[in-house]
Length: 79
Image (cartoon, rainbow, N blue to C red; front, side, top):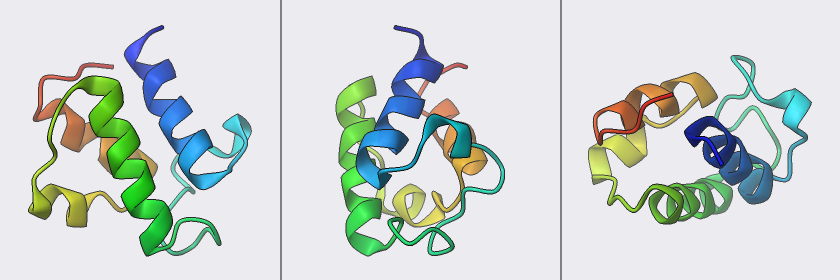
């Protein structure tokens, strides 16, 4: 599985969105499932998928699908 597939899978499973919904328009609190609980579920899934620990400031900054890729890049994850 590629890193992008792992990333997408985390979003689909944590937020209950369809793969077709992934992209620039997927933004924290603009999707009914991406609330604080969904956000923490997403963070845990990303940490497990990539074997990383995301810092609190980065957890707070992860507010869009695209921004998440940038943040994971800080942890050595490439797409």
